[in-house]
Image (cartoon, rainbow, N blue to C red):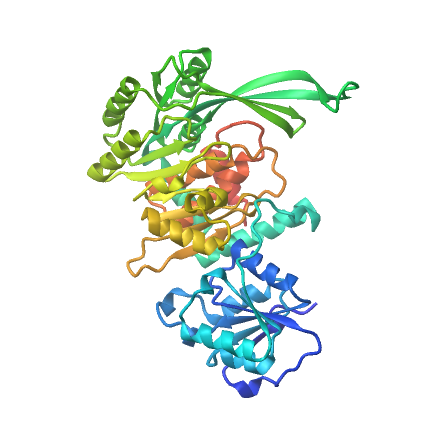
Length: 508
């Protein structure tokens, strides 16, 4: 097998390249590839699907016009691309242009990202003209969009997790993050004061025994064995915040029912200051998940999605104003069930601006209709890729375009794009020269037991970390570890600070 470094050729002079007329047609891709993440991999995999050969041109340091100091060295970037097994060779365009490379190596197809389709950049236009002159084809594509991973088809669970841990440690190293620094940040969690706001959910898990198939119809027949209730929604985010060591208050709207009382007792028992506004018109949201072993069969939801009445909304806002004094961060967990009304959101934003409070937003619209772009001027928002695409009505462009556009539209300082089994990409927008720093953090568990609360645990960990002085990359590393612990347990069990510290100590 060819090593990564053997695939790389740094091209400073055309004489270094033989005039190629390859027997087998191949595809050429182009980019700076500063940090390889799943969006790049999708793009390159799509390009590879067009031909048996794939060559990649990496923009050299000399050709990066602005903010050169923000990019990794050209050979580091080339190594990242060359490490992908489906890439045959990598050209570093040290002092030559993409057009000159095309004239020399004669690719059959040039694949460019969708963002170049209407580009007026002179070098891109010249490159397109060069390949068309030689009868080649130009394709603009972002790669195939998918929301799941096929990794388990290509290796054992232990092999995949070992590789992901290696990638995670590489991400940390690139961003100057180490375990001692993370443990120091975690030690500051107890100094933070957090207010969690949002929809309350009670999750019931029903463990079943699969009996077989009905003789009358193609229906699976199960026997109920045991049930257990967990606090979910914004409630479990508050539970994670408290378990990780911060002081936590929780504000929500619930029904006049037993489930509301269950939430109050459970969260108060964990030491959370619970403030529940009762509304007899909207029972506490209740979700039932039927399972055989760790395989979910289906979910049943009992809920009302109408917005708060004016009287309930007024009570909520009055309590909000009193609770906001002295908090470091406000976490909004919006499941689009009606608690976070436009007026509530506007008031939270106003209070945060006035008091200098960090705002963190997480909106979940897997089975509802919501728009994460309503979270404007937040310190951090955490959409899934699907949620980000819904907000922008865009299902074609690459993850990079989606993330940058959402950052611009919401004016958020930081953004996480959650990619499910592929982990997440963290984007920072707080650089004074508008350079967006980014890093991909892989999911550390390849075969999770229960992914239902992964996003909630990640969100809580990110927020408490940043309120405790961590930068985005430190918070992302901590968040990835908390999520890895959360998905290994059935149900919404908050991750404790002690478990997190032990996990980090064992990473290396």
